[in-house]
Length: 422
Image 1 (cartoon, rainbow, N blue to C red):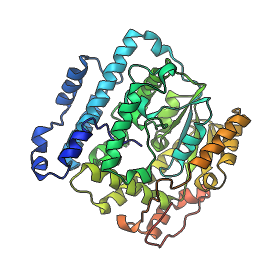
Image 2: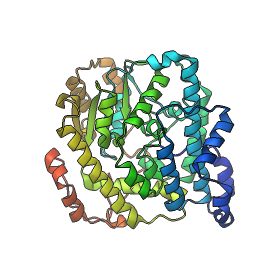
Image 3: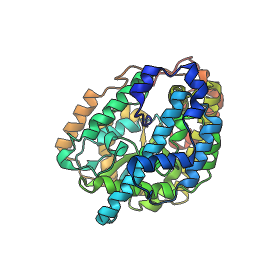
Image 4: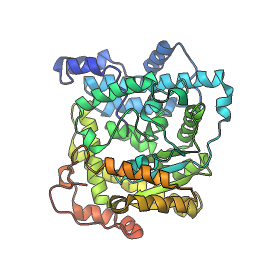
């Protein structure tokens, strides 16, 4: 999960995102159209080649939805423009680096290990836990924010991009303080794949931060191989000077895209996390609402809830359908339950490593034990949410996800309390 690229946050924070004067003139001051975004990225970098795969149609669809549906505040318009322009600038720089160093294109991605599943099902904790194994190369937040030039091991702890990323995250958390209770972020922490996928502008990330239903509906009909081809280019870039034995990658958005994932990475292994969908729906809706309130003038929780539950049900359908239709051999998948991770995370790790025939040393287990001890659940405070605040009813949602729950043996409780605490 990523907060947007916000290079102007300090200035915006001093102005105040609620300024009525700026809200009224924002559309005229901050242009969101494809031509101006491309021009701005080219001006800032002095570069012109955005590389492959083609991206203009998805970018155009996204921008049209932002303008027509997202109800962006002035702050939100600036943040959206900076986010999109930064991704375009990264594409320009990555393409420049590939021309200067053709050997980047020859980098091999071998047996990557992906974590996916329903959002809010423990995948971030599992990602951080498995990252304690030095054999698992994880993309760090600062790397995916500013990938060019390719990171180097010699400066991996001192690169000036780390401080820049930390500063931006600090300002974001001042504006959305509840976010830290929902999702742990940090410049040096493992980052999920959504930032890399978003550079193709074919990404489920955008609908997390913005209300863009027409873009989302279009995206759900697309074949996502172009996004994964760019994802692969991104990994090649990051590992040129700082490789690992295998990539450890994570994003719930991989679940509906398993076909494209295995088409791009045919030797991949995938861990799928599962959790009571009633908790997942409420927690995910809360996440969407917190992010959208940071960037929009109005967010209706009674629209967020139905949108989120529909999207999650569709993700499950597509993921199970891909597995049933043989997108990969069954042994390429390992299923993990949220309650298992809460109760015995090290046993989950051992089972996963046995399943994929990965070595697990006593030293790595000790590192993982320390991680568990220093990263307790609700470290930043409890994330409190409810189905009711999003207009959802436990009995209806339990029925919606009944086949998923029965198939996986995930216990689904008819939650009637007004608050759910994960």
